Length: 140
Ligand code: C2G
Image 1: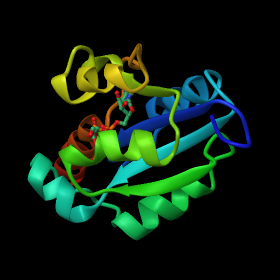
Image 2: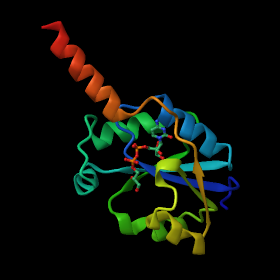
Image 3: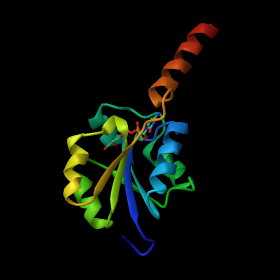
Image 4: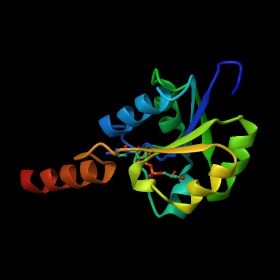
């Protein structure tokens, strides 16, 4: 808890923000009063084997513009999660169901609740990139 009430924390890359991200953030906020998003830095994305199209600074700016989001912090590594939970007095960590039972999140149950929410089907940053790439090929 913090002065705003129940604190929710979630992690992600949030590249090319889409409806799946927004629905996750909306439902995460509904679980508490204050939503913190730890957004992957470009360097951490490289560790995750991902390269985002939108820079960290711009992904942070976009997330800060979303009405469900109260604070955006950097996600620099896998290991920072316990520190984040303690530092921000987090009550619940929320992730999409593709992370269900992942040890990185299950380990947090000693410190806070952990909840997985269903992923929004039919949309992903990878699908957007693939579909746009394919369309470009067809146009030629
Ligand atoms: N998500 C969703 N529905 C989708 C796509 C994504 O609910 N169609 C959720 C994911 O489950 C995740 C969040 O939106 O909880 C952000 O997704 P990504 O940006 O793809 O995040 P990811 O690369 O999974 O990074 O330490 C954990 C990682 O940083 C998570």
